[in-house]
Image (cartoon, rainbow, N blue to C red; front, side):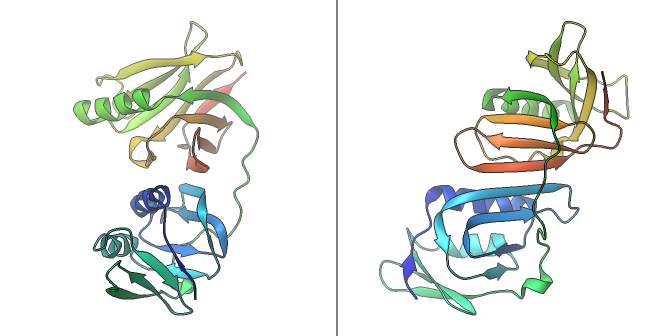
Length: 227
């Protein structure tokens, strides 16, 4: 077994994954994926490291907490467990979980053709999250407006007369009318800017502009789109 380190970006991705699903199955290669227990959020990331061994983690947060016991540890991946090794030689043996016990992505995500696309800046997303928290709102609508623009509206769709927050994010070049609903609680994104691609009726893809990481988040069933 050869020892390896995990980059800061990879550790950040794993921490983000732990907010989506406590389970994780890492397959041989440099692509890692996760899926929420409700199967309405999928995330896939290409990382710097190339894993030679498949291994399953039952509690990803516990693993990350164990890793935090050491500064810049090395990892040795065995058949049944990994060793997390400090610079002083102290180590933890961390045993894998049986893959059959884990909630994992079992097929490749195939994104339908996008009908709406735009760039979501980190500063805009921060304001969305902040307004949702302050106004206690649960929904995000990505919609067209009468000025030919795409706007994001934070609202409670079950209460039409409630407070809301609106911001414009781009031009609507499609000439279509739409309102795509997402749950704020499903927007578990790493920091950064994203290219947003929305298909007509099922899913939104969030592609990080500076890291090779993508999120596929299911649209709510009452989303609408018409040309």
